[in-house]
Length: 80
Image (cartoon, rainbow, N blue to C red; front, side, top):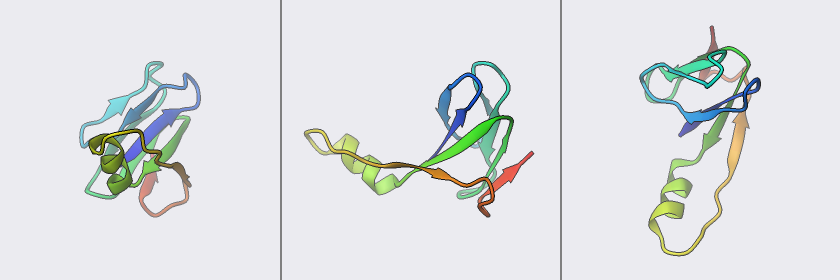
């Protein structure tokens, strides 16, 4: 799972196949296929391992999971 965080308004949202925009409208992004994303504006792409996230929300009790930054130079990110 990939999230997009706007470094201007600090809005954060999950990326989907539909283009999404932050609250200040400076950052946009969307999945272009199952792995790769296209983003524009002052943004940081964040990742969550899907399996860890699912365990945290399905299993009883609280479980931690890590959110990590994905470098803009990564092959899975296209900056517009």
